[in-house]
Length: 369
Image (cartoon, rainbow, N blue to C red; front, top):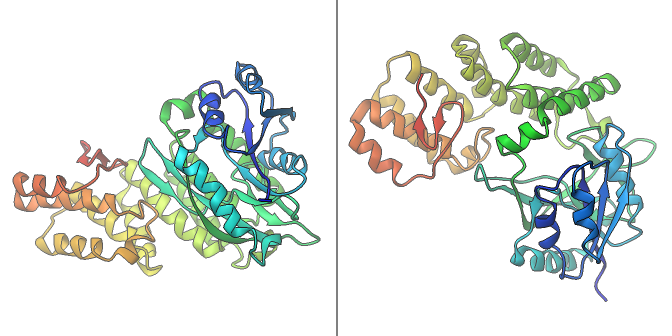
C-alpha cells in the first residue's frame, strides 16, 4: 500500500486563487488540509464547498512557522507537501508527485530529508529551485522563523536538514505586482523580519531577506548598511540550522544590492560591489558593470566579446543571482550590439532570446535612462 500523501495549504484571504489551487490537487488520492489563519473574505466558503478537503483554523500569530508547525502536528504520518494558496499543479505534475514520492519512500535518511519542488513563476518566467516543501510528517522536522521560514531537524540544538530535488513543478503567480500590493506583502514581510532580527540578530538569513524584500523602498545608505552588517557576521552559522552559509548569503546580498543601487543610479557604490562580486567568483559583477557603462561610459568591442564569452559559460551563469538562465546577459548583448554594431544586428540576436525584465530592461528592451 503506497504511503499517504497529505497536501497542506496555508490560507488567509485567498479568494482570488484558492479554488484554482484546490482544483489542481483534488481527485488524485491526496489528503488535503487547508489551515486558515483568519480570512475575512470568501476563502473559507470556497474551501467548504470541497467535501474532500479538511479545513482547520489557526489564529495568526505573526509567524508562518507557527502555522506550518501546527499543520505538521495535524498530519500523523506519511508525506506532507506544503503548497501555497497561490500555487497549483498541472495534471501531469499531480500524477508525477505520487510517482516521485513513491520512489523516495525507501530512502535511508528520511528523518532529515526535505525535498524541493521547482517553483515556476508564471508572470516572470523564472524557475526557483531549492525551496524546501516536502518531508515525512512523522519526522522531527519543523520550521523556524516568522517569515521566509526554513526547516530544521528539531532538537536541543537544531540541525540542518538534507535537501534533494523532487523533480515536480509547482506553478506560482503570487509575485505579480498587483497581488503583492493588494496583500501589502512588502510591509508585512519587513515587520516580520524585524521580529526575526530582534530574536536572532546573528542569523544572516534575516539580514539578507530584509535587504531583498526592502529593496524597493530602501535608500543607498540602508542598502550599504545591510550589506556591511552581513559581511561582518560570524562565518559559522551552523547553530541556526540555516541552509546557506553566511558567505553564500553575503554573495546573494551583493547581487541584490547592485540591483537597488542601479535603480538609484549610484554607479560608484555599484562599482565597488561589482569588484566584490568579481572577487567571489560571481558573473554578476560583469553584468552590472557593463550596464553602468552603457549608461555612463564608452564601450568597445572588447566589452561585447567579454559579455558573449561570459554568456557561453553556462556553469558560471547558473550561479547568477540575477537570472541563472542567463536571459539578462542576452538582453545586455542585444544592448551592446545595438550600441556598437547597429540596430539590425541587435534585432537578429534579440529574435533568438527570451524576453527579460529587470531594473535595466523591460521585456528585453532597454529602459529609458
